[in-house]
Image (cartoon, rainbow over all chains, first blue to last red; front, side, top):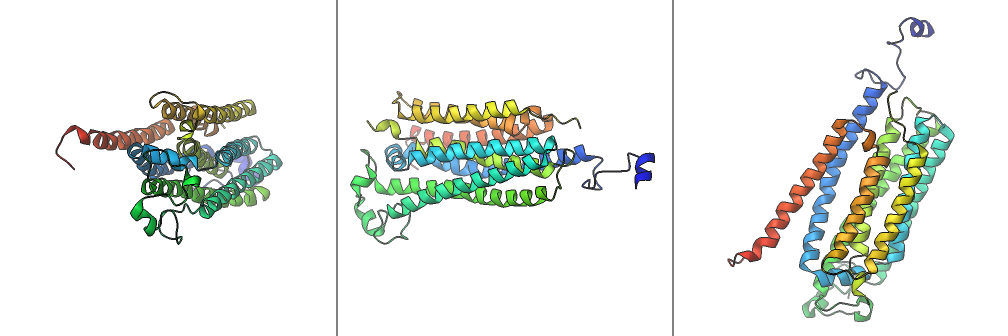
Length: 248
Length: 99
């Protein structure tokens, strides 16, 4: 092995180099391109839901503002900061891998995972608040604001809790919550998948698999993580902030 | 390795810019702008934050042309999806044929 390395350096490759690639750089570039193509499909996937949001918000402006004002802006803003910080630690994990600081790399990945789980924890608190306020769309909760008995009259059961603006109706508020749970639910699912990918990265980074030449997996999981962050960057103002300026 | 390593200083600056953007969007949401400017301000800030993440955290600024084309294709198809659908919905009232 040492001999062949000395005589024919071009044949000796990195142990992680797959046979169908010329060199490590080509392999990493191919992985990055593949991840970006996947992210394009993800953008289109979320795009459909963002389009549904745009249309219904244009059709039901007062109801969407009323429903949005019920969301907890503090928790939403804290979660935004948590996710941005996790994106930063993820970027640092890629950096530390590139410069070969394996210990700092593991620490950055663990921090990213902890911050991701913190986000999910805060999200769970918010979902629980919506459950106790009986704002789950559909007829799953008996005597819910959106239950069949109430929908006939289209009157709020809990008018003091919902602060319906003039022109808002419960049916339309329910549509906001359908879209809210679809978007944040799919986003949370992506966070859970991201947490699984990070766990995989942490396991292999502790085993010392990644180095400056081979860090494709860290980089493409990073791309995925930043994409999920970007989705939230749009979700936060669209879901939490759209009706605040009506409250005076 | 011809790969560009983004310096830590830039990562820190982008991180701080994203936090400032988040604070700005919260503050702006409480100001009652005329017409639809609340939505326009919020989306401008969000697009700005997303651009910073894509260019620096996701290294697109330092990536090959092929990556640029792939990212641009996503923007292009999103623009098609939104413009054609919204053009349909918002022009339906223009003809009094009912739908």
